[in-house]
Length: 447
Image 1 (spheres, helix red, strand yellow):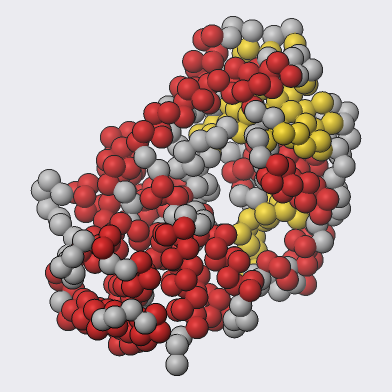
Image 2 (image 1 turned 120 degrees about the horizontal axis):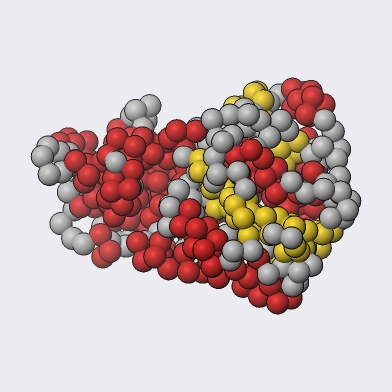
């Protein structure tokens, strides 16, 4: 009999690697369509996220047991091998015999000539001779070893070692490989944090209050999100703690006109609406209609009516809304290097060229957004990355070119006193702060 959990995982891996699907989207779709036990759902998630996260490290291991280029292996067989090696090298609770036998069964079902024998030979060899795939170590190999051991691209590890130092880079890589908790933001338009806590208790969730925001909760245990009543009926919203800080720094007031330039899927937008009591107007922009639909869906579930989704290019908002906005948020497109633990495939889809191309775009968006701010109004720039070139350097270049704006002490607008309260610009590092990596800077337009 074919192991349905493993077969499902192989299909998801195929979609991710061969069709460019996002791992979290493909996984969620497969789990929703299938009738799996809680144990199988957990196992499929582990196989998919673990194998995708291991990425090039798994392929490095695979090269030590095959005598042909990996790209020439039939795609489905390649995914079976990757998943089998992941179980052998990374899952202590899975017997090697089970990893091998189920992989062979999956290869047989595929009907590829010689596929099952090839899979059997490769995986049995890995079980017999694990030392063949021992990572290089010693003098001159520290960065390569860290990249392979932590399952990160070597170019990225080199980049972080250069900018953060080896020890900090190693800690950041280790953090990326931890499980990201579910974080929930209380929808204060429908209930108080205390009332949400009671509802989460009733739903069987285990959680603790956030240390960063008064309306946040970090959930350690929960069932399927589709069945989590407080989430489905709009009493809360999924959002990481560091992301929740942004709306507090913007500081919207009831009756104001706000612009969220890059708003989808609407987490920060709906938070802004909460903080202003759903009174006023929020223009929520994005360049894709299907992403605007996500904003509409979230707003409807949360009972928010003051959000106006608009299809627009953030580089043109200054012309379209010149001097009209009390507050403008630029949650800029970025490399996303602060949220890699939440996106297992993201680390392998980045490049050094992308890091170089983003700052000019970010600067262009920020300059356009600035033109939409009224005299005396507020401009907030945020990203979910840890790169100075995308963060502090973008803001510094903007301020140098726009003397009509003044940098405020961003940390003083954080809702709960902490180590960053005195920061002119707030940079959260995952390995230091225990949250997603995030950057926030608040500026004010001179009257």
